[in-house]
Image (cartoon, rainbow, N blue to C red):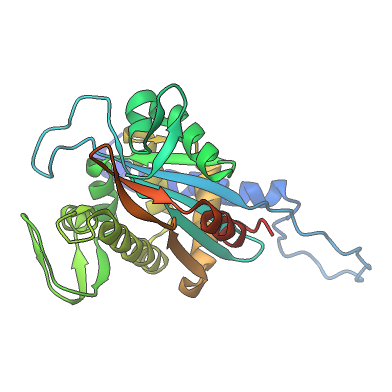
Length: 299
């Protein structure tokens, strides 16, 4: 087949495949695509029930696989630099996120009391999931873990992310001025991962929150069905996730309808403390449970 024909046909095939997938969940849920037909006498129809959509708890983990934005990947095992539990509620049309500082002191099965970031180094995602579930009491339904390289590619695939920088931040690689600015993958990674400020991890978590909101805003403006397919296969190829293609696309459709004011991001409450010469984040268990009840709809 001539190359020119291939270039024309292949995008059409991909688009058709995405459309087939797009409508398949609706068909399974009881919806039908109705084509025009000759006019007939209207028949009374019993009301159809809306498909039941259950809330979803997603664990998002960012790995320290890269030693720097210019350096080669570190050999395994890797620690988790970002730990965020995301509660998606399609019924209430809301997303609530709980960030867990990487230095949070928790019980890790087989290792005792350690920083939660070490769970991934000891037992990859299975032990990380188990540790987060034990710490929060929240059942995790899906997970995704990715490193710098995948993160940067996904941002670049979106054409960059426009982030509102609240205050100046100077790093080894870039200087960020206050105000809205378009960041490419490398810039976005450096911005959210920098720990040079006085509050270190807590300041970094704040910037991760800014990024999360900016990502949703950018996604709603620029992404298409083909973009979503490309994102998913990039993640399946180079990251770790329990999402199926149908999961990812349905979640993306939900995100497209979501309002920014319905996204709430908070950090696990607690305080910094040195124990045996090691700096930890000690969670306030009572306040954490109250926070979880509110964020995850447990009350």
